[in-house]
Image 1: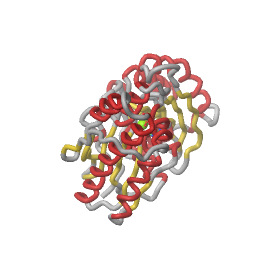
Image 2: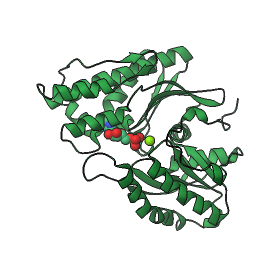
Image 3: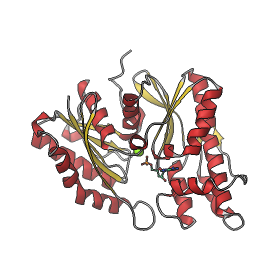
Image 4: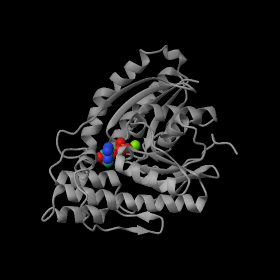
Length: 324
Ligand code: AMP
Ligand code: MG
């Protein structure tokens, strides 16, 4: 089966063609804000100006008659961005006369990584701009075992970085500055059961700017926030007896987070996987591949149900492609 997938939840507009066993082609057009953070309307305007171009690139890489389905990111994400890719996907499906399938972006991150590794049933830490969740498959759904009570860790890093005068995206800049320090300043460590909260760290970090160096603050921010995530992942592994941990989402590119998770996993005899950056960040291949799994299992999305779903939660999706 060959499926064309369109990703466009926040900053990366990406169109990709996949078959059952490989990524055949991918075209990307990233929106990079000139100042401040991601502005949903500006991002959507960027998508609207470039969506025909990226789809055109993909279509010119193949015979369009070989395409058997159109998948698109239905949510979670920014409404204005989701509406652009949804409109393009509907038009394409109608034009080619093939089924349409709306994909949950978080599930797509997990499925593309399961495809590219030998992981059958991992515990997943999904850390992106807007989302921070610990997920695990059980009885036909990806269940959310723990999640942020307020903002996603990526947004928290970006927000703090902006307040310190660093350009978007802030995560990589905070990571680089943190490497220059080992002086720990106490920050709010908030884990409630299996959930966690980051907004206190953002406030404390901004407050610390009055008296501490940026390097010390970045170091302390990372050590505190990442320790919270490691604690919850460890408890999730322990409670479920799962033996693999998979990292997903843009913040997963952080080497210190990877190191801390790897240490925790090795101490409890679990395996830890951090995929390549191309799959950690938002990409069309993950949408196309998850769409392929859904279509192969008889799932498609009627046009009337294909509207944007900005708060689409992974546990709303019945996972029919995992057997047994
Ligand atoms: P996503 O929403 O999955 O596309 O991820 C975007 C988020 O990842 C943004 O908030 C970035 O600041 C963050 N990010 C990217 N690279 C890193 C890094 N090396 N360390 C921490 N955060 C990062
Ligand atoms: Mg993402």
